[in-house]
Image 1 (cartoon, helix red, strand yellow):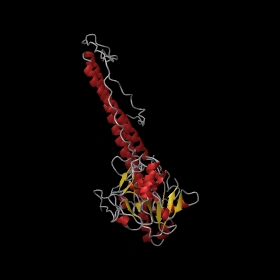
Image 2 (cartoon, rainbow, N blue to C red):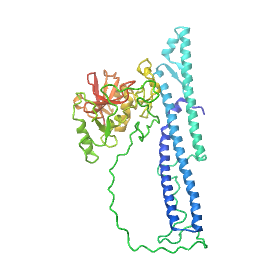
Image 3 (cartoon, rainbow, N blue to C red):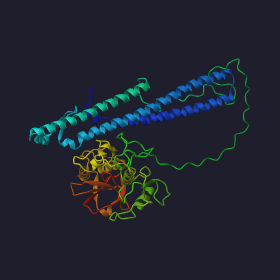
Image 4 (cartoon, rainbow, N blue to C red):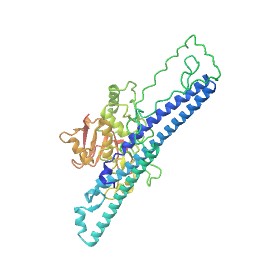
Length: 482
């Protein structure tokens, strides 16, 4: 079946990433079972000798080899799923950028990828034979690009499916997170009984085996050992980010980092800003437990400076780890700050229904997005970052049911029944959003972080970073519903 634009846009490559996580858990469980079996073989060899023992260990070695192969297959499956999720998500993002971006204002793009000029370009084409030819050639070029992406998506999908089939022998079931599809860990093929005598399981004892007298039962128990101190609880890492070990984005895409080798223009950090603000579980001076008291300590720490005065980024500046706090505003700040160093990408972060990094594109007018090749970058623009941070902190998509840019977000949040409330500068709290520009025509949004600082994706050529707040331009502040 030929792929269509709607099928690509409606696809869910991120589900492959979820499957990869389940397979990884199964591989870990298999590895634990293998370790247990190896330990059993060592114990068996030390406590039982003879031909029966040799036969039992040989059989156990065969079973162990099969388990090793099973684990290797799981790891190979995981890699196929990760690669497939990334490839399909990247292509879906490129199709969405062409179909849902500014091009949609000028072209009519059919589901099969064919392109015809919209009313504006039809009027332009009617001016002369030359303009008519120009429009026709542009339509053909755009159509060829879209259909090439559809073909690439189908090829990547087929390759992923074929690779999985070759690894699973045609079976489509994937291991579940609870390892329901894993074989039960096997006990060693033979095992001494509690007194060290003959084995109590198959194979049957060899009548010609060397006799082994039972070992005496211990007359006393070993002295109890002191219980080890429980390790400190470490918050789980659940918020996607650009660092090793961070969860993948639901978009299935991998962000471009500032200064990535191979960038045509290395991204630079603006003076007075920072891409190195550390995230911590506790604010300075607090050593209590997680929960409301930790949240209150963070609110107090981040409220030391009024939002009406610009703060300063210093080596001691810290912000909350989003997984260590529970207040939605604090989680929003932490989720935004965790994206520091990710490349700005015009249009990045706007995949329909899926917050997270995505491939950017060039503005319709030649600007910095052309200078820095945003169409080759995967990251966030300002409203894409605000959308992602809010979804992690509050659990809802501020770009749902609107056009998704700053204008659409602000209007939807502050409309009757929206999820936001306007607040004055004097009442700003961490996690509030600040929209810059005239009412109904905002052009930039930042996440207020407290102490006169914001987290923002400022523009092409500048990575996501923590910056001093600027309130000189016309703006409006929006607090999201908890």
